[in-house]
Length: 174
Image (cartoon, rainbow, N blue to C red; front, side, top):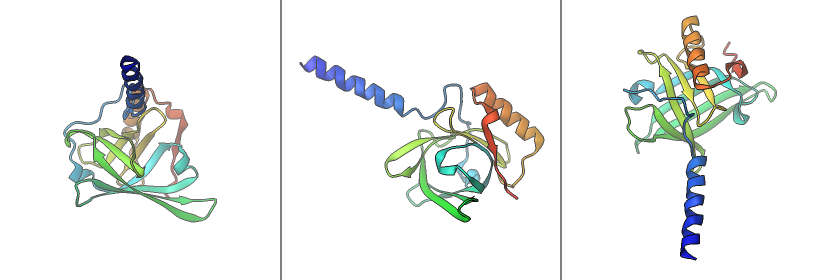
């Protein structure tokens, strides 16, 4: 009986760990990540359309350091159909070393999901961010526009990981 109980809890634990996957298999978070340089406002240039961002334009993400060392996340966008701004406030924390762009973000209490900076220019002006799996991808910029060469590099990197970049929504920032 003890052996069956142990195997049951081991199976449940393995299932739980698998469901907590934090990054797509072929993705790698950036090394030598500097949170202080990443903080501030980012414009969402493109995304894979997900439920809580569906129908939003002029989307931004703002990151600021909280007193407990976690990161306050404020996602904002304009709902065209409802003619109003929507905002979600969450928090992020590192999954491991703070020099690696691998974080977990939560907007719903104790439930966290992967937030992985997988490409970043040296000046922290453009970022490619992967979620927990191939359903989550964002291209971010400090301005409302993205240079063509950065766009091409990010799209190629995303495709190499397995993302279908044809499904990206290009956000209206004008």
